[in-house]
Length: 367
Ligand code: AOF
Ligand code: ZN
Image 1: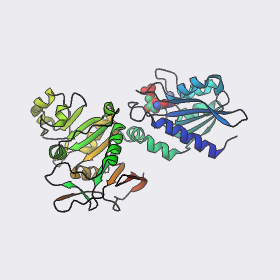
Image 2: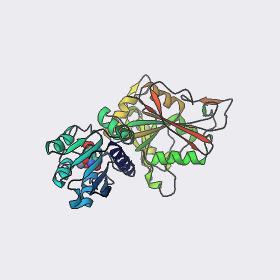
Image 3: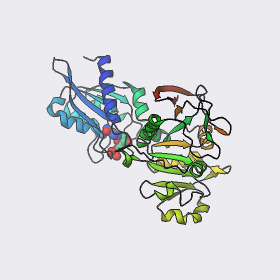
Image 4: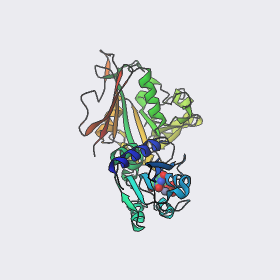
């Protein structure tokens, strides 16, 4: 018997499972699958799977392999519509049919044109009961990078800001100013570990000489691609970014005409991406398209104020991660484009937390 409350509970568990491989599955979304059956003593999980690191095998085939014959007559909870295309293996929708599952409960629909609507259709055609859209909003939140990249051909953009009580992100000429404490900083590093790329403007790269890596113990290898908006190639060869380019990739977005200046940086392993210019600045929508084409699904914009303003003005921000510290900056402060209580129109609070002395609020764009 279908039980909507039970379906939500198992889907919540499948979503938590899927979160484990976020950022590790390449251009594939990290999907979770649970196979659940009830032989009279209450529902029991007999198989579970997450999209493997690198993107294959898919979640469903792994969960079905674990369940074996117990999948027959069971319910499969899938956080994404099961695939309908032939990759290295037959489609997951066909695998679910072959295993004899009785019900499939899905969260998100798959915008991939090879799959969209067809995965669920294969299941229904085989007489399987299909329930779509269970905890769809949570699934869309977890898979935002994949869903936005598939639908809009650009990565999901998260604007991360650390703001003082008086609404500043730093002080002119002083480089990095501590606004938030160690717990909030660790959270930022965790966010970095789950992102495909971090992006800053050249102003921030010059003023702060940041590393932009994930420096949490055990997660150092999870540092994402570091991108600098630098049309005139001003990034110094002596910067921390350039000096560490062989360990963690650095991509300089520059006007092709200035590539001649790139010799010293290129020798250090810095990569270049040619950009179009619009009104004297890098054309961000086109750059985002190019990044998506390279397989980047999630970008964290980490500075500075001008770069943040431009992403907001272009309507390219999907999520705002706002950390507010307890201190004030006062004279000489650099105003944040977003402060607590004054969030741009179209964004809604998705979650809030306290990290030590700092407040955290996350806003997502309402579509
Ligand atoms: C599923 N289960 O766990 C995932 C799916 O390159 P391929 O062949 O792996 O296909 C990538 C597509 O597979 C991707 O665009 C999306 O439609 C789907 N991802 N599907 O049934 C999974 N990760
Ligand atoms: Zn599949």
